[in-house]
Picture (spheres, one colour):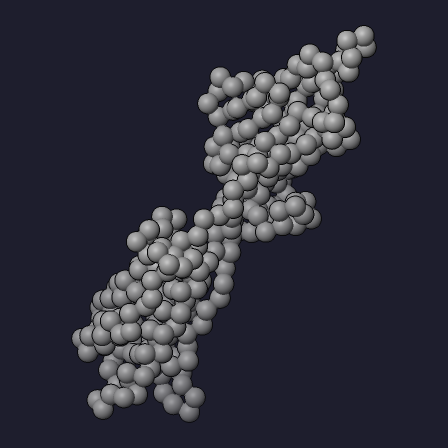
Length: 316
């Protein structure tokens, strides 16, 4: 009970500063021009709007076209503005809304360069990929001297510790998730056996940001995760200081100084992966897996699979 009271005491020490939200850059005016030599790659953030994709090459863009007719097709067939997820302007410019269907998009343009010249026909292809930002988190491990491994005290302590850590990072819109908790018998150097609990937990940023905290400083996901990391490091440091200053005997359950370790982890969602060679224009993006590959879990890369024939495959 003394240990639990100490945990909650440490949580209230030195309240942290508030942080702010930052808006990402807008690409509403970005225009993509095609090529007749090779398909142009376009990367669209999943469930966002695409940039303006022109049914033109750089050469045609500088010419006057007489009676041009534009026709777009996508992975599902012909595209039309009648579909709420598609917007095609009279000049043939395509915008994909709430994008989620990767694949080959083709524009057919029929035109004349002068009233006396014959009709010309051109096919322009785009490879349009959905991508998402990597999901980043910190993974922490810490060791506690604990009660016998079969004691119910350990489960109660674990629950209380997670509640304290969760409350600690909630103010920066982050959450704590227990990955594993293992109790072991540890043979000490020149000593006997003691019971230790090895905690592994992750700290992730919530997608829904708390607007109340975003008043004066940036509060993007990376900033909030960094803030959460500092809060947790300070929390364990304060446990050590509290134990050192206490005149009482060590309790049965206490944090073992120097055992806190942390690693930065980033991963892609199933069906997405990073590939700087295939996607040099978006090397740090989690790009949808192309046909012939898949990602079944939260790994960083798409794995080869000859039987996969769709974009975003999660199984082979």
